[in-house]
Amino acid sequence: MATIKQVATAAGVQPATVSYVMNGTGSVSAATRERVLAAAAALDYAPSYLGRSLQRQRSHTLGLALPSRGMDERVATLLSGVAEGAAAAGYDLLLAASGKRSEIETYRELHRSRRVDGLILLDVRQYDERVAAARALGIPYVCAGQPGDDSPFVALDVEAATVEALAHLIVLGHERIGLLTPPLELALATEQDAGYRAALAEAGIAFDAGLVVEAGSSEGEGYAAASDLLSAPTPPSAILAGSAALAFGTMHAAHDAGLRIGADLALIVFDDPPSAAHVVPALTAVRQPTFEVGRELAGQLVGVIEGQERPRSVLLQSQLIVRRSCGHAVQPG
Image 1 (cartoon, one colour):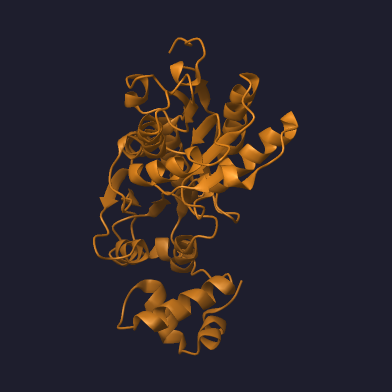
Image 2 (cartoon, one colour):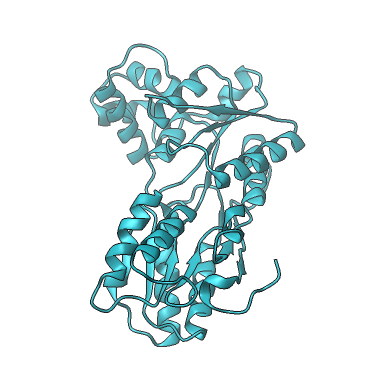
């Protein structure tokens, strides 16, 4: 473990400046702050949270910055789970809106003001600068999704869920299957891609990179990506959409292309919002235990804060709900 002097030397600043950045105090330029955080992350430096906790009382509050994309059904359900898990452990939940600030600046402010004892990081990325910032601040944290390091996390087993979804389509006779993923910087997208490739390999179907599209996060982006796939010389006969927004965009694209979902094109959505069962045709969906993920996130973070011996990673399983969008008999539920 590096010392504060080593971090200061690597960043080209005085140790006091490192202390200011770690504590969120003093006047430090943005460029200097980023340089210090980068040096701290590279040297795996983290101030002793235990020492700090002995100097102050805990707030018994968990912190979470709301995603910039806003509140959708999945986020609302996850937050309900977090709130229940926090309350069960005797903690409150503080939701912070970043506004014009970055999430990292929001976390620094929450830490500086000592309003929270730990942080939940949503929509974790493979190499997430928020993780480096939390480590540098010395504040307990847990990731929603699998990070690219040894950070504690709670996540859905996305790769296994994707394999199950693809296997369902393959059994129905589909071989040209499109995959629309969220932004590839998200761990979710990387795991969907891995599951997609694994399922094709297991079935002996050649991988075609042209069928995999980083579609984005909005319905409009899903529409554009699906339109491109469906207008190709050899379009897919089935699509797995990596989010509800991408699935609804795909439905509109199919309609505009004169295709019938469930007859001309099979569609599975990697999510199961209430609306998925009520659109026409009802969407076959990968149902995620979103509420349970939220509850586990709170429990995991409380365990980190209180030094409990718990598994550093929790993987939850999904359920494939078969409806009419794949042209198959309806499964109850």
